[in-house]
Length: 309
Image 1 (cartoon, rainbow, N blue to C red):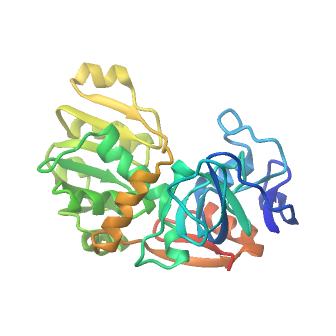
Image 2 (image 1 turned 120 degrees about the vertical axis):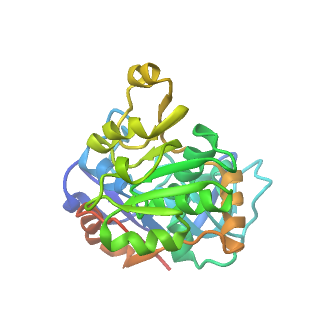
């Protein structure tokens, strides 16, 4: 099969379009014929070698985690998925990455694809949607009637956070650049703040949760936005537990975990018209170098996807 592999840590030129054997699913695993794979910032961060302490893969390694396709074969003990089934989910790069014609994933990380999405759009969903879901409902423990301030509301994670909040009766306030104000409002935000024009601290009242997808100074300024007992959750910069304790609030740094049952819930919301995804650029698999270059330039709105079939 064809696959895109990292041969050395460095720039896009270290990605090679290779011929490799089709992987074999082991116990509890599924082999997916890949139709599309999303390009996420973590993909090029791994390629650059930034995350070797966390993701220390033996090279060469097939890159990518977000996948949509059809189950080609199942390993021993798999009961929830069957050959021929359209699926999406998160594959494990230690088994087989997503930038390939076939990929192996754990049964517990793969779910039936939303019926209303094609493979390209389905591939854009798993990592960003799971990150938003887990931030709001696992880490943040948000309930209907509460409120959330989302920094980076127009991005992949932020856009799903806005939509999930709206769907669950949570008031969503988003910060975004001026060009994305209308987009975030259309997603369901009760209020959208142009961070280039207005200091968010002066534009809205205290909230139950801040979702920080930006880090740095934005996070520092966000402590003042929390109600007593509120929580600041970040995917960007580890927030200070000491500051949180001093202020009578909570803080958490989070990293997404694959979860098929949550993907099934997300599929239900998508198929009910309560959440949507935006794909802005599609590249053939052989042009993964160019796709990662575009991602690395900064891509605030819309996903980049590799089309395999």
